[in-house]
Structure formats: structure tokens, C-alpha cells
Length: 481
Image (cartoon, rainbow, N blue to C red; front, side):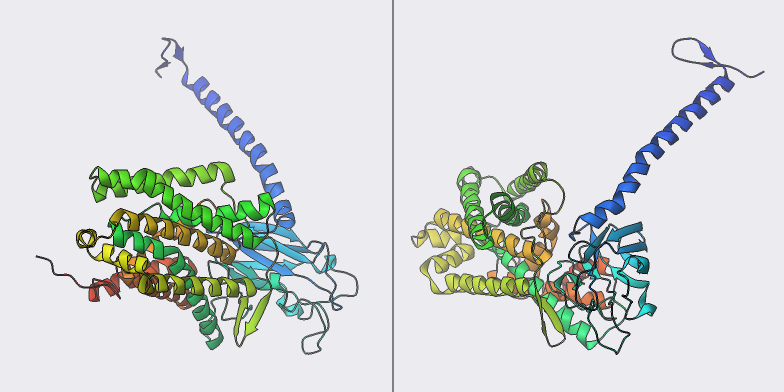
């Protein structure tokens, strides 16, 4: 005889009735999920067709521009994209451009619906429709469909010279790479090695600009500042506010962002770190404070600006070819500015009294104080300078990525710590050397390993170098015991 089930109210429920109720509940839940999921699935292709994709740490982009043989934009052409992220659809806009956002890295098959291109137009190479492209998160990859005379017969069409067609194989999205077998990870070619080397040098230089303040702060105070990444994010977000919300030109917005970033460094030391030093709070406790500060600031950014990408500039940068290397003009300007500023930091440290005093405080604070140097005053200068450099790095990295976000600096924090440690803790020039090494390793490692793992390769190099030279590349060995 089957027993009944006693519920909390003391009544009995027959097992058959309980099963029927469970089945009804399951059916209602399934219907609800289907009703919720169907509109979301239907809206996905529309969004990809109307909104320009911006690559970030969680998103990759497949982009392209369609032009007729006469060079006119193709409007309303439909492209189907199939891959790990599912089935997606894009439609070319009034400029002939189209883009698709994907949330999973891998190979995608892109098909141009030839029935949607203008009458009389044909694909220059029908064998390349559909075509397969390899997409990495944080990067844009072009899928080109030239229209015009058959291959070898000339003609216009989508040649890949348009700026929007320039794919980026680096996660930063700054240097444009022509779509070749080498750029999609199908082999090691001289052109691809040259392109990735340039990408690594650019990324390393921008990373050095963002991380040199981290090194200076550690050198003068002994504090590992886990909130330094938020200073980088702050610079990019302030530049976004200036250009997109206030309507200022890029250069004034960048200057204001750097000035406000430096001011936050001054305020942090005056209102938080100097009182903690005066009270004798230990380095471990101060480091925990920086972790909490990092979390608080990052979520404040997310609350006010959202979790999506924030484009500092919306114009598509032009690209230039230097031998086998393609690079955007924005990246060239960012590289030049970063190099000039790093040179200025070197002159400050080596050629000015304040710089020499900073180095003295970093070397021996007690002896520096006995020599008449204001230790707290120099630490205040270092905090201000470091925060300003981080803000400038955030602006330039945001331009290099194509966008910034609430967590753009936090995503780079581990690489900044790796660069500072690799170069030598507390050595400002070590941060530069370590950043260049990290940048080159991150980019060139994608020749042999999946793009998603290239940041891990930088940490492996860090471990190997420290096993051979524990003090870092430019650090000084110290006697223990």
C-alpha cells in the first residue's frame, strides 16, 4: 500500500496529484522561458545590424565595408554569421559598413547573401563566399567581400583599404592588420611577425605609461596599490565624458582628464594615505585598503556609466601602411605622446632636484629626511604624478582599444604588476623595460598559442625571468640575513 505524503499543514497529498502538480509547474516554467527567450533571440540580429560593434574584453567583432565596383557604398546587404556564438545576421548601413558582435572566440563562417547586393554587381571572387575568419575577444576581424571584376581584372569594391575593414588581431584593437593567412592565425609569416612585433611595442609603451606611476608609488612608500587600475579607468572615462557628454574636442578632454586624474592622486595622499602613515598603519593593512578602494571605485564607475564600452571618439581612424605593417594614425599619435611623456619622466627623475629627491626618498627615506628632504612632500608629488600618468595611460589605451569601460584599468592591473615586478620593484625604468617585454610576449605568443591564452604567456615569462634574476631586469640585488 502506497503511503501518502504529509505536508507542513498536516494534510496528506496523494503521490499522483503531487506528480501532476509538478508536471504542470514544469510546463508553465518551460512556456515562460520560451516566451522570454524568443523576443531576445529575435532582437539580437537587429542590434548587430544597427549598432556598431566595439571590441572589449568580453566581445569580439566581425566587421567589413561593402562597395560597388564604382566605389559606392552597398546599402542593405545581408550577411549571415555562424559560429560558436550562434547564428547572427548583419545588414550594411548607409556607408556600406556592417559589424557583428560575438561573445565567444573561435572560427566564424560569414556568408554574403548575393541576392541583396545591387543588380549587376558580382563578387570578385565567388569562391570566397562564404569565408571563414578567426575572431578573438577584445579584437576586430574583417571579413571582406570585394565586388567588381573577377580577380586579376581590377575594379573597385571592398579592397580592405577602408579603415573599417582593417582587422585587429591584438586585444587592444589599436594596430590594424590586413586580413592575410598570417593575421588570422593560420601560420607564421614574416609579415605577421612584423605586425605583431609593432603591436607589442605599441602595447608595451602604453602599458609602461600606465604602470610607471605604480612603480614610483611602490618605490617611495612600499605600497602595492591595487587601486591603480581604477586610476587608469578614470582617465579613459573622463575623456569619454569630455568628448561624448560635454562635447569638447579630444585634446582638451584629454588634458582635463589628466589634470583631474592627477588631482585625485593629490587628494588620496592628503586625505587617506598620509593620515594612515602618520598613524603607523602597516603595509599589509594599507594594501587591503587599496583592494577595498579598487572595488568601491570600480562599481561606482559601473553604476554611473554602465557595463558597456564607452567610445572616447566615434570617428573611424584612418590607417597607414609602413612596409608589411598597418597601423592607425590614432595609434601613431598615442605612441608618440607616450614616448615623449616617458622621456619627460626620465628627465624629471634624472635631471631635476625634485626627481633626485624622489630617488633619494625611494632609496632611504630616513637618510633623505636627515638631509633636509621633505619625505611627505615628495610622496605627495609621486602620488600626484603617478595618478596623472595613469589617467593619461587610460586615455591613450582607450583610444588604442577603440573604447574604454568601467573595468578597463582593472583588466590590465595584473599585467601592470607583472611589468613592474619583471622590470624591478620600485625601479621606474624597470617598469618601462618590463612593459615592453610583456607587450612583445603577449603579442608574439599568439603565433603559437590561442589568442585567449596570450596574457597567461606573459605571466609564464615573468616566472621564468624571476627564477633566473629574482630582483627583476633592472632591480638591484639585496642581501637577506
